[in-house]
Image 1 (cartoon, rainbow, N blue to C red):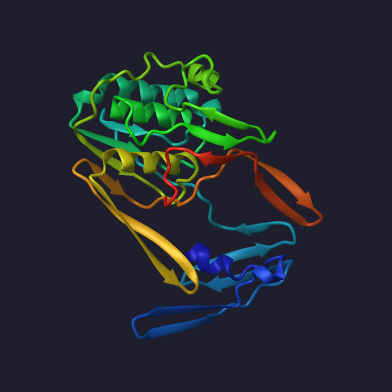
Image 2: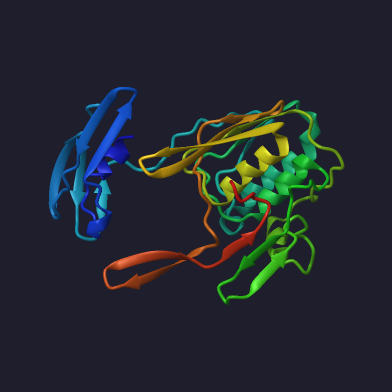
Length: 283
Protein backbone atom coordinates (compact mmCIF):
# COMPACT_ATOMS: atom_id res chain seq x y z
CA UNK A 1 0.00 0.00 0.00
CA UNK A 2 2.82 2.41 0.85
CA UNK A 3 4.51 1.78 -2.50
CA UNK A 4 1.28 2.48 -4.35
CA UNK A 5 0.45 5.69 -2.51
CA UNK A 6 3.97 7.08 -2.75
CA UNK A 7 4.55 6.22 -6.40
CA UNK A 8 1.35 8.08 -7.28
CA UNK A 9 3.24 11.29 -6.45
CA UNK A 10 6.16 10.59 -8.75
CA UNK A 11 6.36 12.50 -12.00
CA UNK A 12 5.05 10.68 -15.08
CA UNK A 13 6.48 11.45 -18.50
CA UNK A 14 3.18 11.05 -20.36
CA UNK A 15 0.75 13.73 -19.26
CA UNK A 16 -2.46 11.87 -20.16
CA UNK A 17 -1.45 9.04 -17.83
CA UNK A 18 -1.26 11.25 -14.76
CA UNK A 19 -3.81 10.51 -12.06
CA UNK A 20 -5.13 13.84 -10.76
CA UNK A 21 -7.50 12.66 -8.06
CA UNK A 22 -8.52 9.50 -6.20
CA UNK A 23 -12.04 9.05 -4.87
CA UNK A 24 -12.23 6.35 -2.21
CA UNK A 25 -15.63 5.34 -0.94
CA UNK A 26 -17.08 2.81 1.49
CA UNK A 27 -20.81 2.89 2.24
CA UNK A 28 -21.51 6.59 2.89
CA UNK A 29 -17.91 7.60 3.60
CA UNK A 30 -16.18 9.31 0.66
CA UNK A 31 -12.60 10.57 0.63
CA UNK A 32 -11.21 12.71 -2.20
CA UNK A 33 -7.42 12.51 -2.45
CA UNK A 34 -5.73 15.10 -4.68
CA UNK A 35 -2.36 14.11 -6.09
CA UNK A 36 0.51 16.56 -6.37
CA UNK A 37 3.32 15.37 -8.62
CA UNK A 38 6.95 15.91 -7.74
CA UNK A 39 9.53 17.74 -9.82
CA UNK A 40 12.72 16.21 -11.18
CA UNK A 41 16.21 16.42 -9.63
CA UNK A 42 15.08 16.96 -6.05
CA UNK A 43 14.84 14.90 -2.89
CA UNK A 44 11.53 14.73 -1.02
CA UNK A 45 10.07 13.25 2.14
CA UNK A 46 6.54 11.91 2.06
CA UNK A 47 4.45 11.02 5.09
CA UNK A 48 2.65 7.81 4.12
CA UNK A 49 -0.42 6.20 5.61
CA UNK A 50 1.45 4.42 8.36
CA UNK A 51 3.48 7.57 9.20
CA UNK A 52 6.66 6.07 7.81
CA UNK A 53 8.93 8.62 6.15
CA UNK A 54 9.88 7.48 2.65
CA UNK A 55 12.68 9.31 0.89
CA UNK A 56 12.70 9.66 -2.85
CA UNK A 57 15.39 10.67 -5.26
CA UNK A 58 13.54 11.59 -8.43
CA UNK A 59 15.77 11.73 -11.46
CA UNK A 60 14.89 12.39 -15.09
CA UNK A 61 15.65 8.79 -16.04
CA UNK A 62 15.61 6.84 -12.79
CA UNK A 63 13.20 6.44 -9.89
CA UNK A 64 14.86 5.46 -6.64
CA UNK A 65 13.44 4.63 -3.23
CA UNK A 66 14.85 3.11 -0.07
CA UNK A 67 12.76 -0.06 -0.23
CA UNK A 68 13.39 -3.07 -2.43
CA UNK A 69 11.55 -6.28 -3.23
CA UNK A 70 13.81 -8.49 -1.17
CA UNK A 71 11.68 -10.90 0.80
CA UNK A 72 12.99 -12.47 3.99
CA UNK A 73 11.59 -15.98 3.94
CA UNK A 74 11.87 -18.65 6.59
CA UNK A 75 11.88 -21.94 4.72
CA UNK A 76 10.22 -24.84 6.47
CA UNK A 77 12.54 -27.84 6.46
CA UNK A 78 9.93 -30.55 6.13
CA UNK A 79 9.87 -33.12 3.36
CA UNK A 80 6.30 -32.30 2.31
CA UNK A 81 7.15 -28.62 1.64
CA UNK A 82 8.25 -27.80 -1.92
CA UNK A 83 9.75 -24.44 -2.90
CA UNK A 84 9.61 -23.03 -6.43
CA UNK A 85 11.10 -19.52 -6.42
CA UNK A 86 11.29 -19.24 -10.23
CA UNK A 87 10.22 -21.44 -13.15
CA UNK A 88 12.99 -20.21 -15.48
CA UNK A 89 14.76 -23.47 -16.40
CA UNK A 90 17.86 -21.80 -17.87
CA UNK A 91 18.82 -20.19 -14.54
CA UNK A 92 17.12 -22.44 -11.99
CA UNK A 93 17.26 -25.96 -13.45
CA UNK A 94 19.30 -27.36 -10.54
CA UNK A 95 16.86 -26.29 -7.82
CA UNK A 96 13.86 -27.19 -9.98
CA UNK A 97 15.27 -30.68 -10.49
CA UNK A 98 15.72 -31.22 -6.74
CA UNK A 99 12.17 -30.17 -5.84
CA UNK A 100 10.50 -31.85 -8.82
CA UNK A 101 12.37 -35.14 -8.32
CA UNK A 102 11.24 -35.18 -4.68
CA UNK A 103 7.64 -34.47 -5.62
CA UNK A 104 7.54 -37.09 -8.37
CA UNK A 105 9.13 -39.77 -6.19
CA UNK A 106 7.30 -39.17 -2.91
CA UNK A 107 3.96 -37.68 -3.98
CA UNK A 108 1.77 -40.35 -2.40
CA UNK A 109 3.84 -40.56 0.77
CA UNK A 110 2.25 -37.34 2.06
CA UNK A 111 -1.37 -36.65 2.98
CA UNK A 112 -0.58 -32.93 2.74
CA UNK A 113 1.65 -31.19 0.24
CA UNK A 114 2.74 -27.56 0.72
CA UNK A 115 3.81 -25.71 -2.45
CA UNK A 116 5.53 -22.35 -1.96
CA UNK A 117 5.71 -19.83 -4.81
CA UNK A 118 7.86 -17.40 -2.87
CA UNK A 119 7.94 -14.33 -5.15
CA UNK A 120 7.98 -16.65 -8.17
CA UNK A 121 7.72 -14.22 -11.08
CA UNK A 122 7.37 -16.95 -13.71
CA UNK A 123 9.66 -18.25 -16.44
CA UNK A 124 9.02 -21.42 -18.44
CA UNK A 125 5.77 -23.36 -18.60
CA UNK A 126 7.58 -26.70 -18.94
CA UNK A 127 8.10 -27.32 -15.18
CA UNK A 128 4.53 -26.11 -14.59
CA UNK A 129 3.12 -28.71 -16.97
CA UNK A 130 5.30 -31.47 -15.52
CA UNK A 131 4.27 -30.70 -11.93
CA UNK A 132 0.58 -30.69 -12.90
CA UNK A 133 1.05 -34.02 -14.66
CA UNK A 134 2.60 -35.37 -11.48
CA UNK A 135 -0.34 -34.22 -9.35
CA UNK A 136 -3.13 -35.06 -11.80
CA UNK A 137 -1.93 -38.38 -13.16
CA UNK A 138 -3.78 -38.92 -16.41
CA UNK A 139 -4.50 -36.06 -18.79
CA UNK A 140 -7.70 -34.24 -17.84
CA UNK A 141 -10.33 -32.64 -20.09
CA UNK A 142 -9.26 -29.09 -19.27
CA UNK A 143 -5.70 -29.80 -20.44
CA UNK A 144 -5.66 -28.36 -23.96
CA UNK A 145 -2.98 -27.88 -26.61
CA UNK A 146 -1.32 -24.49 -27.06
CA UNK A 147 -1.76 -22.41 -30.19
CA UNK A 148 0.20 -19.20 -30.41
CA UNK A 149 1.48 -16.63 -32.89
CA UNK A 150 5.25 -16.43 -32.82
CA UNK A 151 7.49 -13.45 -33.49
CA UNK A 152 7.91 -14.54 -37.12
CA UNK A 153 4.07 -14.43 -37.40
CA UNK A 154 3.83 -18.20 -37.84
CA UNK A 155 1.25 -20.09 -35.78
CA UNK A 156 2.65 -22.86 -33.58
CA UNK A 157 0.47 -25.68 -32.27
CA UNK A 158 1.92 -27.97 -29.62
CA UNK A 159 0.85 -30.57 -27.08
CA UNK A 160 2.26 -28.94 -23.96
CA UNK A 161 1.35 -32.01 -21.91
CA UNK A 162 3.86 -34.18 -23.79
CA UNK A 163 6.88 -31.94 -24.08
CA UNK A 164 9.40 -34.76 -23.76
CA UNK A 165 8.45 -35.80 -27.28
CA UNK A 166 11.43 -35.24 -29.59
CA UNK A 167 9.26 -33.23 -31.96
CA UNK A 168 8.21 -30.82 -29.23
CA UNK A 169 9.73 -27.31 -29.40
CA UNK A 170 10.37 -27.65 -25.65
CA UNK A 171 12.17 -30.99 -25.85
CA UNK A 172 15.54 -29.43 -24.97
CA UNK A 173 14.02 -27.61 -21.99
CA UNK A 174 12.80 -30.93 -20.60
CA UNK A 175 16.27 -32.39 -21.12
CA UNK A 176 17.82 -29.42 -19.31
CA UNK A 177 15.82 -30.30 -16.19
CA UNK A 178 17.41 -33.76 -16.24
CA UNK A 179 14.73 -35.30 -14.04
CA UNK A 180 15.37 -38.77 -12.64
CA UNK A 181 12.01 -39.93 -14.05
CA UNK A 182 9.19 -38.11 -15.79
CA UNK A 183 5.76 -38.07 -14.12
CA UNK A 184 3.91 -41.29 -14.95
CA UNK A 185 1.16 -41.56 -12.35
CA UNK A 186 -2.11 -43.17 -13.41
CA UNK A 187 -4.07 -41.77 -10.46
CA UNK A 188 -4.71 -38.31 -9.11
CA UNK A 189 -3.16 -37.09 -5.87
CA UNK A 190 -5.70 -37.66 -3.08
CA UNK A 191 -4.29 -35.48 -0.31
CA UNK A 192 -4.53 -31.77 0.43
CA UNK A 193 -2.50 -29.15 -1.44
CA UNK A 194 -1.59 -25.94 0.40
CA UNK A 195 -0.59 -23.33 -2.20
CA UNK A 196 1.31 -20.29 -0.87
CA UNK A 197 1.14 -17.31 -3.22
CA UNK A 198 2.65 -13.83 -3.27
CA UNK A 199 1.82 -10.62 -5.13
CA UNK A 200 4.82 -11.18 -7.43
CA UNK A 201 3.28 -14.36 -8.89
CA UNK A 202 2.76 -13.64 -12.58
CA UNK A 203 3.54 -15.27 -15.93
CA UNK A 204 3.96 -19.05 -15.66
CA UNK A 205 3.38 -18.89 -11.89
CA UNK A 206 -0.07 -17.47 -12.69
CA UNK A 207 -0.64 -20.39 -15.09
CA UNK A 208 0.42 -22.79 -12.32
CA UNK A 209 -2.07 -21.32 -9.84
CA UNK A 210 -4.89 -21.35 -12.39
CA UNK A 211 -4.11 -24.94 -13.44
CA UNK A 212 -4.28 -26.09 -9.81
CA UNK A 213 -7.64 -24.37 -9.42
CA UNK A 214 -8.97 -26.17 -12.50
CA UNK A 215 -7.59 -29.52 -11.37
CA UNK A 216 -8.57 -29.53 -7.69
CA UNK A 217 -11.66 -27.33 -7.36
CA UNK A 218 -15.13 -28.77 -6.97
CA UNK A 219 -16.61 -25.44 -8.05
CA UNK A 220 -15.29 -22.07 -9.22
CA UNK A 221 -17.45 -19.06 -8.40
CA UNK A 222 -16.77 -16.14 -10.74
CA UNK A 223 -18.06 -12.64 -10.08
CA UNK A 224 -17.56 -9.13 -11.41
CA UNK A 225 -18.32 -5.61 -10.34
CA UNK A 226 -18.08 -2.27 -12.08
CA UNK A 227 -15.86 0.14 -10.18
CA UNK A 228 -15.45 3.70 -11.52
CA UNK A 229 -16.00 2.60 -15.10
CA UNK A 230 -13.79 -0.51 -14.98
CA UNK A 231 -15.03 -4.08 -14.75
CA UNK A 232 -13.27 -5.87 -11.90
CA UNK A 233 -13.40 -9.68 -11.96
CA UNK A 234 -12.83 -11.85 -8.92
CA UNK A 235 -13.88 -15.22 -7.59
CA UNK A 236 -13.72 -17.94 -4.99
CA UNK A 237 -13.32 -21.70 -5.13
CA UNK A 238 -14.92 -24.61 -3.37
CA UNK A 239 -12.51 -27.49 -2.91
CA UNK A 240 -11.97 -30.48 -0.66
CA UNK A 241 -8.24 -30.55 -1.46
CA UNK A 242 -6.85 -27.17 -2.55
CA UNK A 243 -6.18 -24.47 0.05
CA UNK A 244 -5.15 -21.09 -1.40
CA UNK A 245 -2.98 -18.96 0.89
CA UNK A 246 -2.06 -15.37 0.05
CA UNK A 247 -2.62 -13.30 -3.08
CA UNK A 248 -1.15 -13.58 -6.55
CA UNK A 249 -0.70 -11.35 -9.55
CA UNK A 250 -3.58 -11.43 -11.97
CA UNK A 251 -1.95 -11.48 -15.39
CA UNK A 252 0.42 -13.49 -17.52
CA UNK A 253 2.78 -12.30 -20.21
CA UNK A 254 2.79 -13.77 -23.69
CA UNK A 255 6.37 -14.85 -24.17
CA UNK A 256 9.55 -12.99 -23.31
CA UNK A 257 9.40 -9.31 -24.19
CA UNK A 258 11.78 -7.16 -26.23
CA UNK A 259 12.47 -3.52 -25.51
CA UNK A 260 11.31 -1.07 -28.19
CA UNK A 261 12.31 2.60 -28.08
CA UNK A 262 10.67 5.62 -29.68
CA UNK A 263 12.43 8.82 -28.67
CA UNK A 264 11.97 9.01 -24.87
CA UNK A 265 9.34 6.27 -24.70
CA UNK A 266 10.33 2.67 -23.98
CA UNK A 267 7.90 -0.23 -24.43
CA UNK A 268 8.29 -3.86 -23.37
CA UNK A 269 6.67 -5.63 -26.32
CA UNK A 270 5.70 -9.35 -26.12
CA UNK A 271 7.23 -11.63 -28.74
CA UNK A 272 4.33 -14.08 -29.08
CA UNK A 273 0.61 -14.24 -28.41
CA UNK A 274 -1.52 -17.13 -27.21
CA UNK A 275 -4.49 -17.90 -29.43
CA UNK A 276 -5.72 -20.77 -27.28
CA UNK A 277 -4.50 -22.87 -24.36
CA UNK A 278 -5.80 -24.58 -21.22
CA UNK A 279 -6.76 -21.23 -19.67
CA UNK A 280 -10.43 -20.41 -20.23
CA UNK A 281 -11.24 -17.11 -21.89
CA UNK A 282 -13.20 -15.82 -18.90
CA UNK A 283 -10.13 -16.28 -16.70
